[in-house]
Image 1 (cartoon, helix red, strand yellow):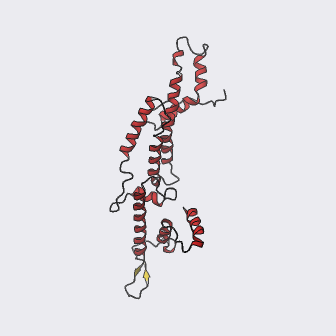
Image 2 (cartoon, rainbow, N blue to C red):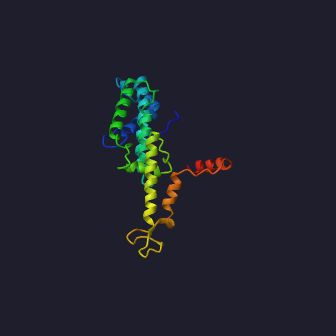
Image 3 (spheres, rainbow, N blue to C red):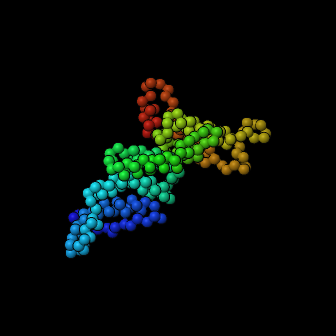
Length: 233
């Protein structure tokens, strides 16, 4: 049949995504399972009802489409070799978007979509809330992550507020790193109780450059400047 020989997977209530794994594997092995259940030399007489009907197979296929984003999100957020906190708002936004798939037709699947959307919204209602006086650490991390720095999962005004807060924090950190000495000769020094700045104290400046588009001095150079900024973005 051209199907991989894989064992069926059982759903376990204590295992994340095991329902998806079970349904995905069952859909993958649909024809071998159907052939085995239809073979009278293998399946006892009166047991053919165990085979699923066409509408049940269609239901499994649609459920897999709904559950797949949750499985992908779980696998990604379980990683240990890369940063995951900054990706959380983007992932939740994508899950909610995937749950709005209008191509699904089965009433049970549509009901599940509505319930899952409600649960995701309720559980992560504070994830994208941002107040400058009490910054959301997750959104600040996302603004500093090159993968999500444009904050497309936020409204434009809220994304601007997050970026402005990060720029203000970076400018404040730059000022705090350089302080006049007690002799008043204008020289700068780093406080003993503060760690030395990385890369010769250039981190805050680089951060501001990272968040701020490069200035365009004249029209002749504008196209080159914008290409440079897009490349850095």
